[in-house]
Amino acid sequence: MKLHQLRYLAAVVQNGLNITAAARALHTSQPGVSKQIKLFEDELGFQVFEREGRNLTRITPAGEKVVERAIRILEETENIRRLSADFQDEQRGAMSIATTHTQARYVLPSIIKRFREQYPEVKLHLHQGTSEQIADLAAADRVDFAIATGSQELFAGLALMPCYRWHRDIVVPRGHPLADVEQPTLRQVSEHPVVTYVFSFAGHSSLPELFDHAGLPLNVALTARDSDVIKAYVRLGLGVGIVACMSLNEEEDPDLVAIDGSHLFPEHLTWIGVRRGRLLRGYMYDFMQLFAPHLTRKLVDQALRAPDAAAVEAAFRAVRLPRY
Image (cartoon, rainbow, N blue to C red; front, side, top):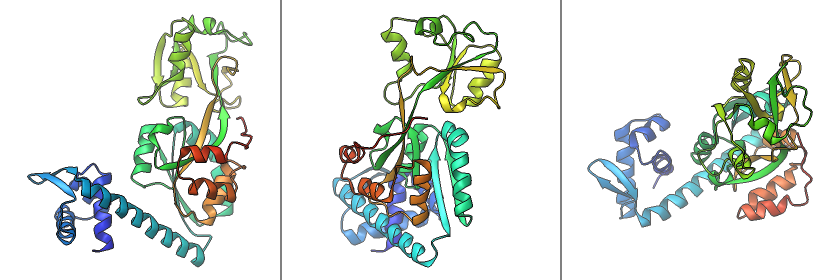
């Protein structure tokens, strides 16, 4: 039994039992992956995968136990590498982050700038996507951090640490009927078409539920994943924009009027997720504290040792979270 065979096994599982995709992710050949999986099964004396012809169709019950342990071994191997790297040079390394457009565009730039000033030799990789795409990257263990809002049910393997709360604001062009209304009602908003974020494919979407609960129509003219795209269509007069409060800036958007929506829309919680049991390098702790100052090394370690989401939540119960 060899370590690279465990890597091949994990890659096959993480790529949906698609050997071609696993080989591509491993930068090797498909026959090579197939051969090593077969040798691994021969050594075990039982099949990890069921097959139809050349295709893998499912993981066997015994295989499930093997895969679980293989992934655990690979995680600990990576932890040893991180520990070695920290002892050799605490100032060099790499760090990968998967996050949403709003975080990447409006929240992270100043934090990453400060981080780079402190650690100029650390290579940063920023992956931007939807919650579902971020979850896929995290499940495949391709990123160190996942940063998102809501959709916690997609990230069962991560310790999700709360960072800050925020709300949605209303944005309209200057001269719009709502531009001079300091605290518009939900009914006033419902009288106009709305331009906002794509509704979640997983779980509930709070905005439609809010209007439905109030018995008001929600006329959605356009949905987009990108705050800048939403603002562009608001400028064209397509509708009233409903966007994250941090995506509005007087200097960048002088032609738009931002209206505080905290009296209308529920608060949202942004979190940073790390795989449970992961050994973090020193600069990773520093990045987390730059992003959320209350994330001390002690609190992060406590969260990473927590057995489940309820234990993580309990660790942060006494923490007063900032509001953006």
